[in-house]
Image (cartoon, rainbow, N blue to C red):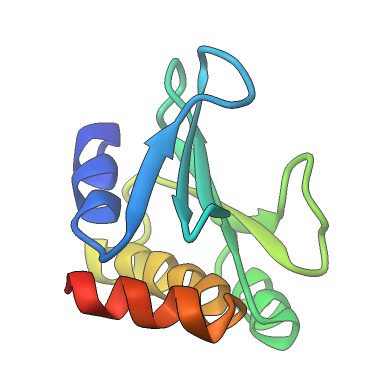
Length: 118
């Protein structure tokens, strides 16, 4: 998966917006104004995703391409390398999980508004 494929995958999810709130190099994807994925535009070889704390540890133990979130809360965030070792399906599952983690934490009203967009 490359940066453009990552971007396309994130943007097809209901209620997702993208922006550059941390500077010109950090592309951020949000659902309901809450961050669920960020990546470097210049590097484009890794991304950070939110994760259930127990699953975060499990993924780090299972895959050397998954490490504690760089510049993030290491309990809740993983950095995932897109070096070709993980399959597209595995990467998408991690992105989906992050989206779902953030979505379920949104107020019910916002969840319903986003569901109506789908």
